[in-house]
Every structure is written in structure tokens, then in C-alpha cells.
Length: 176
Image (cartoon, rainbow, N blue to C red; front, side):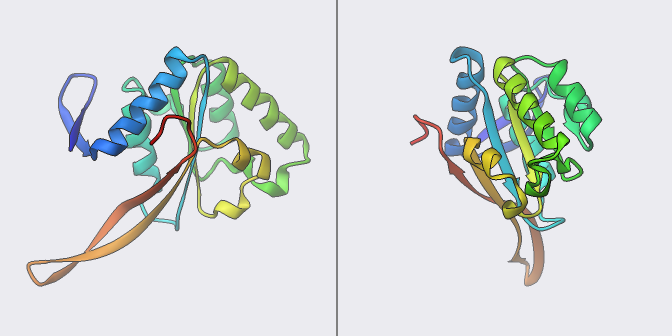
């Protein structure tokens, strides 16, 4: 286990060694390889996608703040335009990546924003409730997909809900 620290150096949460290595690989892509990272995090409402995404974004970029956790189109555009080599989280309210909008004016806007993400070396993490609702071109561009679910375990003969259980499926060279 690796402890992740906040801006003040206080340990806040832990990651497995493998997940920490993956976050380091993502940092390398945006800081040394003149590239971007795109991740899609999906799971049922209330499963822990948002918290998982924010923790992972923080592991990539410990300067992340509320201005780069976006819940609508305007926040998302603002975050992209004013960031460089940073992480940006698009939460469920960011319906821009849904396949229904792929050929609309907003769909074209998303393609332009994705080009900006690449030029600005951003790590973009998008949370969605259903992976099949994401536009195919965005899915094809994804460097990783994460499925997050809610589970349960017994503690002292009592069933306890656990959120944020995650399976990560990377597609980045050097992720093994």
C-alpha cells in the first residue's frame, strides 16, 4: 500500500502499489511525453465513482481543486481552457460525452475540446453511469476504463456496505 498525501503533506488515503504505479505512468504521459490521458469511470449511481475519480485525479495531480471537478458543460470548458498538465474530472452531470449528442453542435464542440486536452497535456477523467452511453470515438480514445461498484462485507457479524470497489482496465503502453 502507498499513502497519498494532500498539498500539506498529510496522508489522506491509500492505494495499492499497482494502482500507484499506474497513476505514476499517467503522470509521466502528461509531464514528460507531451500527451494526454483519458479515463472513463462507470458504475451505478451511488457506487463511489465520483470519489474514486477524485482520488485518482489527486494521485495524478495533487493540486486539483473544485474548479477542475466539473458538473456541467460551462465548468468543463472553463477547466480545460485554464489548465495545463493538470487533471480534470467530468462528473455525471457532464452529459457531453453521450452518444446521443455525437453528431450535434455539442458533439463537435467536444471534439474541439478533446484536441485542446491533447495540446494542454491534460488528464481527463469522466464519470458516467453507463459505459454504453459514451460516444464511440471517446471510448476509442480512452487510455483506461474503470468499473466501480458497491459491495458488502461482514464486520463483527454485521453486513457493511463498501463503495468505490474498482476494476481498472488500462490501455496505456507500459502499464504492465
